[in-house]
Amino acid sequence: MTKRSWKGMWALPVAVLLLGLVAVAQQYPVTVVDNRGLEIRIEQQPSRIVVAGIPLYTEIMVDLGAVDRLVAVASSPDNPPEVAGLPRVGESFAPNVEVILSMGPDLVLGASDWAGERTRLEKLGITVLSVGRADGSISTVPDILTAISTIGTTLGVEEEARLLIGQIAEEIITIESTVLTELPVRAAFLYAMAPDIPPYAVGSGAIENELIIRAGGVNVFSDIEGFPQVSFEEILSRDPDVIFTDPTQIVNILENPLFTGVSAVVKKQVYGINARHLLSTKVARALRIMSEFLHPHE
Image (cartoon, rainbow, N blue to C red; front, side, top):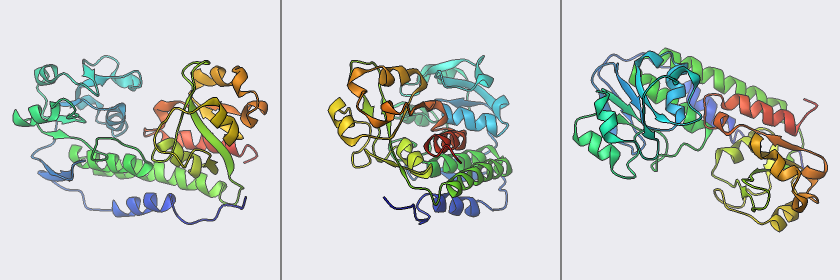
C-alpha cells in the first residue's frame, strides 16, 4: 500500500465552492435553484418558515441565527435542541400538508414529493425549497455546503452562510492535510442493528465513504453501492483494520462471535460515530473524530 497522494479529489470541491461564494449580498426578490434545477423566486425575506425535510435544514437555520423564524419542523430525534418546543408536521419522508398549511408559512423547506406533498403545496401558492440531489438526497460534503449557501441566500443571511461554510471548509482541509502523507487504513462503516443479523455496509455514494477517504482511510466496501446487507463471511474476507458504526451498535460487533476473526475486532478498533453528525453542519467534527481513530498518533 502506498502513501496517499494529494489529488484534490475531495478538498478541491470544498475550496472551489468557498471561493465561489464571495459575492455581493442580494436584495429581495432573490432567485435560488432547487434540487430539480428549477429557479425558485423568493419575493421577500421569509418570516414564517416550516421545515418539512431532514434535520439538516433545521440545523442550518439554527446555525445561521434564523431559528426565530421557524414555526414548525419535521419530527426527528436528530433535531437540534433549539427547536424542542416547536410544533411537528410529521416525518420528513411524509409531512402532513394540512398541518403545514395550518402554520401559515411563507416558505417550506425540504418538502418531499414522494406522495405529492410538494406539488400540493406549490399548487396552493406556498413557496417550497428543497436542496440536494434530484431525488432529494444530500450525500456529500459539497451537498451540505451548497445547502447552506442556498438557504442563506433564501433567508437573506448570505454573510452568515459564507462564514459558516468557510469555517467548515477550513476545518476539513486542515484535517485532510494532517493525514496527507499517512498510509491509508483499511476501514469499513457498518450498521449492525442486532448481533444475530448480518449488518449493512456503507459503499460508494454515501457520505460515510467520503469521510473515510477524507480521514485517511480506504473503504474496503468501496466497490459496492449504497448500503447493502453483507454476510459475516464477506466482512471476514475483506478484513478491515478499523470499523466505524453507530455508538449504540458497537456491542453488536465486538461481542458477536462471528466477528472474532476480523482484525478490527481483534484489535478492539471498533468506534462509534454518531450518524446525526454526518449529514450535518457538524460534519467536520465527525471527520476529525474519524481521522483520530484512523491515525491515533496525529
